[in-house]
Image (cartoon, rainbow over all chains, first blue to last red; front, side, top):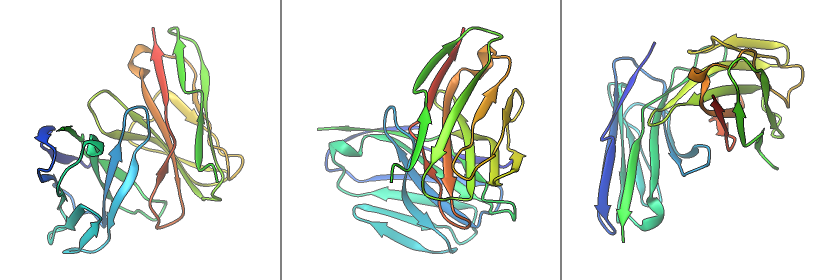
Amino acid sequence: GQQLNQSPQSMFIQEGEDVSMNCTSSSIFNTWLWYKQEPGEGPVLLIALYKAGELTSNGRLTAQFGITRKDSFLNISASIPSDVGIYFCAGDSEVTSGSRLTFGEGTQLTVNP
Amino acid sequence: NAGVTQTPKFRILKIGQSMTLQCTQDMNHNYMYWYRQDPGMGLKLIYYSVGAGITDKGEVPNGYNVSRSTTEDFPLRLELAAPSQTSVYFCASSSPRDTQYFGPGTRLTVL
């Protein structure tokens, strides 16, 4: 099946620092999504990207859909303690019978005050 | 709207027992999904449904069954629980060509 390689696996940063994480795939995706998961909760959508080359922001978060359609990155600027959580990328291959998300393995983010 | 709700939140099963994980959504979404998340891993698709009466296998369907008799409900059935099915299970729903919304998850342990 399709696989996404997400890196880094974990990050330990100081409050105020910027963060960058990325996902790469051997397959092309039609949509790239970035989710955040907090302990005991389901993933919550942060940003959705629908077009190759698209750069989208949501507050302090910025994500880009790679030109090759095989990669995406997420940046968080000026991190704060509530940014702590696991960040997942997901690629949507959008088959005719419904959307099929493939998830990366997640980046565990820890922010020290 | 409550969104996607799942019950129970936690469950411990003995090997060989059966159970049904419930999932309900009130957003009138046609598409519903079941995922499992193992420790330190991303989510893997078990089964999905594009509408009432229609279900299809995902990446890891073995040991599970689903049904979709209504738009709102998409229960996941484990017939003979095995330790390998210890995981956190997430249900999600979406409209066609829209993003998926996830429930809070069911944490299942099989001993």
